[in-house]
Image 1 (spheres, each protein chain N blue to C red):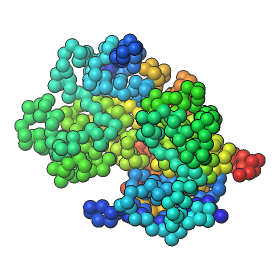
Image 2: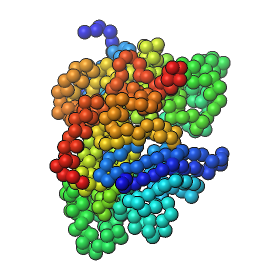
Image 3: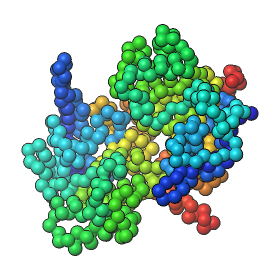
Length: 284
Length: 279
């Protein structure tokens, strides 16, 4: 075991939502997360896998210090982060940043790219304007965009480029931890490959820690070090990528694997043969 | 003879910035009882060519084709009533967003019975009985209860089952499915694909599956057309496409699949084009 403090650690995280009642029904409490434990070491990637309604995005929002959990404690760099009691300090806020799924919805259409990138610095730091501009221009280059993109508006960019801008914005404050909520789900396959490559380059360069939320097991297998499978608010299985993909234990994980389409040539050959046989016995 | 045969189809849209060609000289044909997958990324024109067949494009679109026939009959010059007898009965379509495809103000039962009354001329009572039958055959649990549900009371997968029930109500010979599982979870996707394949085999209908997902292609198609920027890149049976892709674009798409990753980096499509260009 390592002795270093994990960059992010959660213990017994619980999130309850109150569903208000109507005239005829009382209000009720929905438990979206039920006692989640996790820890991610520096420079590693934890993938959180689950289907819609599993609570994976709820957990991502808690880790990104957007929502406060109902119960449990969250530590960032060993320090207790309780945003219900205290607003996060700029120092804490700078450590954790988030990238959202939909790059069309997460950028302000009236804000130029340069302003998008400089805003976190205005809010959280006291750098002078020239310094902010220099840092924003340098970051554009880091995510493979051009200096001339600085004064353009988000609608002038493709989905993949917008996701690069969102990643650049998240990196402006030199965070230790990046929470990525389905960052490539809205992108085409070819663009998805570029963004995944960029993420792994940036992780290496800045020693970033990632919490990567996804429903796509093939992406998870490519990017993750550790995987947490979550179903109905419960972490049903947790382990290293190698162990989990080699030998999934929980029936829910197994059903996810069984449902994921395979593009393996032998599997296709078998399916085509089955179909031919079925056709011969029941001709159309 | 092919069931649907399209030769040299082009679709142009009039935009403020001039004419934009979404589909550029595409040939598509599908045989009886065949599953054809049309694959492409956004902007490849994969949906537009099928919307042209269905007559669902807006007035700004100009459709030209050397041939557009269904079962030997010319679709492009059909009169309105003749076309309506064909579309929605013999050729039906389901869409990506099942929840958005249903009218939120009416129960799903009302909506499927409307189809049955209009297209099959059934009485109210027969329509209800047939709707329940269809709900059973697409695997909706408790059909007697669900038939009175509104779309928002059902999950995405169940709404897609309702859409499929509507689409197969008239026993079509061709079903066009436009990204039918893109909005759904993998386990639900598997169920819906299995259902489509089972119905396709039971009813012997042809299925055109429009998708961006190579996994879906691998699990369903007999034959595949790969499109890129409105042009056809490759056409092959599913096994040869995956085993021995001919076009550089198909090779690039397949190697960009994360499960095919061999090293630390994923090859990207643009790198692939550069390499191919250099050779």
